[in-house]
Each structure stands twice: as structure tokens, then as C-alpha cells.
Length: 386
Ligand SMILES: Cc1ncc(COP(=O)(O)O)c(C=O)c1O
Image 1: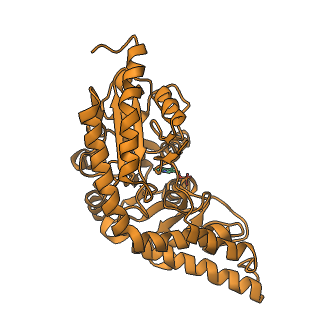
Image 2: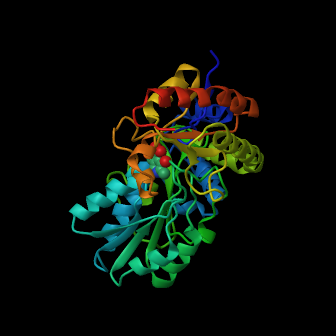
Image 3: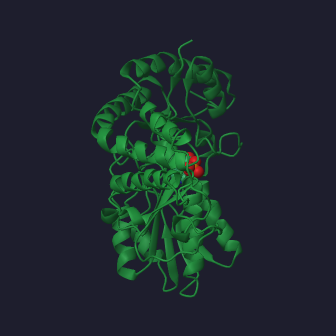
């Protein structure tokens, strides 16, 4: 059976050129970057080259990049680190209801530590309103964290507009850009952010490696203490293979982004159109235009999401329902509920996130099976009425 991967927002395959680069530091160039000898110096060189490759991808300076174990750690470091370092100035924090759990649960942790958090609502497309945001700001607001694009519905937030407001008021601004870095152009200066999280495995790099962009002179408190690596921001011997893989993936993303996105935009549009025209009672979720290329999310009333995924998997298609991290839970996704969808509709969600190697033929083959899977599940559902 032919297997077709359409779950690139969960993770991506590692690019062969990335594997090749990683092998060099897993074999001959195996040194510890902190060692004084030639092996160490050579490993240090590889780490610093990767740092500049990552910086180049997001318009930052090399010294503003801190390597972490992934997006989750970068989010924790930014949010807890900034809240603790600035708690003397105030205890109010702002985020949104549709953040990834790496952000949401970190804010819930801070609430238990005595911070006050405003969780902003979003509109039907999943965007935070800049007006509502302005109203939420208080004299004691010290930190804002809003995701650049949502992992479940693909909506891109008006980060630059919010960034102008936080900058005017001297409030620290973090964005979780795990779903956008390496996939759409991201520039930290135009976004007006002080901190930004990214993760290699979302753009053809390895898992377990990411980075936090920390604007020069912004102070945060480190979470991991020890040998003082990463200029004391994040101790622990560097994950050199991961870092080198992240650097190469960043370079490839920068070079190939226009071609990758021209194709993904076309595939995504075609798939979205075909879903709404060929499957009755289907609704596309997320913003119609402000979205990640190739990311298509939809809900089908009267369908149980997990059953749809299993049936798709049985015929060779890998997709997801809500986010991979929350699938398995019986509660419908917090993101879809925040968009105003009913529990019943939110239960029938499907996320198809295409990647650079998907083709129009993949889309055609998917559309040969998806309408039948949906109608088959509806026929068994006591809830679905035509
Ligand atoms: C928006 C968002 N933030 C954070 C993460 C977590 O990143 P990582 O898997 O690198 O820890 C993910 C992963 O799915 C994500 O989509």
C-alpha cells in the first residue's frame, strides 16, 4: 500500500542534506564545544555556524540565538524566564486561549506562582483582536505571549500590530513561532518581538532541538543551571548533532522557501476547495487567507475525528485531528471551541498539513477516499441528520 504523509504540522521527515551534516558531528567531528583542543574547537565552529544560519533565517544576530531542546523548552524559558526576571515591575501577563499547551500550561503554572494571567479570546477565524488586546493591557502588565500561527487551524496572528503596542509601552513580547519559522518568512524586527521560539522538526530538521531568539539586552532568568553554556542562558553540553541539523535545515528553508510555498499554496487551495465542494456539511476552520501554506483544516458534523484518522490510516494517509499532542484525549480541542464551534462539530476535525514532497496526485488520491470515509461514518452516527 502506498503511504502518504499529510501531517507536516506534527513533524517533518529529516532532509537528506541535514542528515549528511549531522553525520559529520556524530563521527569524526565529535568533540565537546567547550574543550580547548582541536576537537573541541572544531565542534565549536560547527555550533557557531549553525547559530548564524538560524539567525539569518529570522533576521536576528547570532548572539541573540539560544539553543534549547525544542519549542517547548524555548516557550518555557521565554515565559517563565521573563516573568521571574521582571516580577518586581508587575505580575500581570497576557496570552490567548488558543496557544499550544507548551505556552498555556506554562502560564497556568505561573498563575499558581502568584501571577495574574489574561487569556484573550479569538474571533471565528482564530485571530486575537488588537482592540481587545489594547483593553487587556494594565499598568502592571510585564509580558505578552501570542503564537505566530496556530498549529491546529493554521491561522496567522497580527503579531506586528501587537508588537507595535507592546513596544510603545515597554512590555516584553514573546511569540511561539514553532509553526512558522522555516515555513513562511519570519523577521524578528518587523514582528517587533523580544523573544521568539522555533523548533527544527517542523522544517525538515531533527527532533529535540530548537532555539529561543532573545533580543539583545532583554533580561530573563535561566531555567537550567550548570556549566554555563549558551552564555549562561541554558547550561548543559550542547546537542551538537541537533544544532548542526537545525542550522542546515534553516539554511535550506531560506533557500527553498519560495519554491516550496508556491507549490504548497496551490495544493492547499485545491484541497480546501475540493473538500467544501465534494463533502456536504464540511466547514473549513481557521482564517481563509492569513494561514500557513499547505495547511488545511476542516470539521465534518456527525463524524468522530479519531475514527476518521484510523480509516484514513488504513488506506495509507497520515493526518491528524486537532494537534498531535492532544489527540487521544476525549475532550474536543480547546482551539476549536475557542473559535466558537460546538462540541459536536469540533469532534469531527481533520488537519491535513502538506509538505514539500506532496503532489497534486496525492491530493487527488486523498479526495478519492475522504468523501466516502466521511459519509460512511455519518451513516453510523446517531447524531448526524441530513
Ligand atoms: C505551536 C507549537 N508550539 C510548541 C510546540 C512544541 O514544540 P516541540 O515539539 O519542539 O517541543 C509545537 C509542536 O507541535 C507547536 O506546534
